[in-house]
Image 1 (cartoon, rainbow, N blue to C red):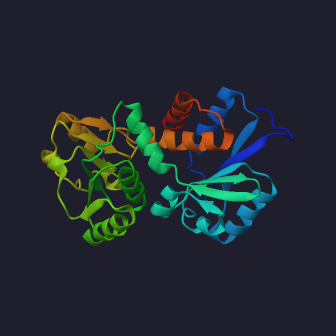
Image 2 (image 1 turned 180 degrees about the vertical axis):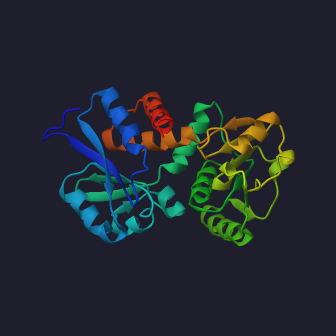
Length: 279
């Protein structure tokens, strides 16, 4: 990669930022396509967020990914925000164009594209269960609601958080969203967003015996590639999907928004897998 005065800059901000695999993913895509771009990680502390955004704008940076702890606070500095990002209440992709900054959240469409890659669709008009009630769960519930799922049930270790999330998004999307409702056995899709699925010291938030073979079980946790939930679901005959695909596709969507070029998803996947293998 040769950087010149014409090289366009994209990157990611966070604190910490050392753990991010986004530079490997995006720079692999840039190299595969031969584009004159470079993707750079920037360690930005919360107190410096506004100055960093203004600096990117002044320096003609093309786009920035946003990770913890800035996904909510960065909204203050935006001129436009997508419907998905508004509903989710968080932004993970910034686009700098014509003096304006727009914000998007690619987690929701990345989640859906990873399903489509497996030849699967969300159960439009059907029922889905989402495990967890944090920021990732919010993104998944929004994705499912906008994709046409009729009923979404949220289960969480802290019941009040599930109820609060269901109440908030039900009102904003017009979809029937419930906390506390155990619909695992009658749902076409079960999605886990809780990181406890990779910790053997915690019990799973659903009993695998509730699973039916016709269900799709999707765990967005990507470490390990086969979580305890996915292993149990496979034993029950369910179609299972891991979280690596969502991680790749949310990055690919941002890449296309910045460059206007269809990204080489397989190159991005290989780079991500290689980054995990080196850990």
